Length: 295
Ligand SMILES: Cc1cc2nc3c(=O)[nH]c(=O)nc-3n(C[C@H](O)[C@H](O)[C@H](O)COP(=O)(O)OP(=O)(O)OC[C@H]3O[C@@H](n4cnc5c(N)ncnc54)[C@H](O)[C@@H]3O)c2cc1C
Image (cartoon, rainbow, N blue to C red; front, side):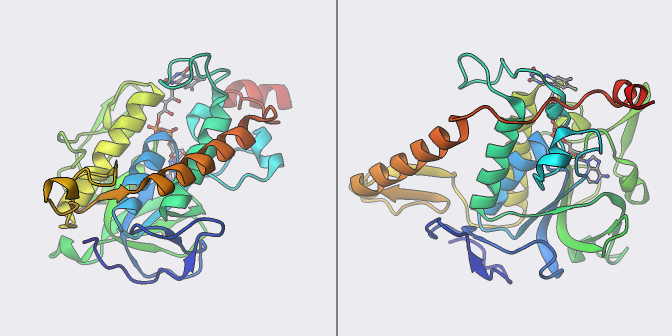
């Protein structure tokens, strides 16, 4: 059983509903208490959101948008801007034998997170504090620059390179050079119950696949701590569990051959469409280079 969550209002268009999380709410539609708010819609934050949303947790991702110098500002893509948008050719991410356009990869991950049921908003988080100092179970309030505050029971900081907004929570930050990293345990948990950190900001190596894997791991820790009934996020052929007289464990799904072929067809269509033409977006330049060329 997946956890029941409030406020799922609309099926994702063109997508079948089925698992917990196959619904989305438009950003800004309602600002109640979320199960989890992820600060940073880059590589690790998006990976975390796919797992928490698929497990049925009401998952909200808030992320800073592209800088004015980014070609994505013109293209109108409304996702946050990962530092990976600066990459020229992503060639060490498993699954792409000759590499992949990093911006196309990010688009596809955003689409995957949305299909899973995560909702998104562009914005910068400026401050995080508990709803009630004496009871962290009541969750956290995130103040945003120029927007309404957000509330969530759990917060994942996936916001490389910024963690200043966590200062009021005293999560345990370590300064290395000009940057602050957040100290975490093996599941990305900080010193404050309910606050997690994922990706580069948690001190992980500066590689996309590592950030994605860490985001997934932190998402799983959040699911575990949320008491959602969960075994693994697995899709298996029909009979894999039931053929052995077992119930399909929570988080798993058995699909028959017809459904497997239908999903495979949809997956191929999505990928073929995404890569039919080159993406008309350039790598985002380092701010100091971009700013000096504006002068
Ligand atoms: C030029 C360049 C080339 C690279 N090339 C490669 C490569 O070839 N292969 C490879 O594996 N890795 C590469 N990387 C590294 C890779 O991009 C990072 O390791 C990875 O993106 C880290 O993921 P992350 O989720 O920690 O951070 P990010 O993906 O950067 O995500 C952080 C997100 O948090 C948002 N954010 C920050 N502060 C706030 C705030 N206060 N409120 C809201 N949102 C906030 C940011 O806007 C961003 O969306 C490259 C990096 C650079 C800079």
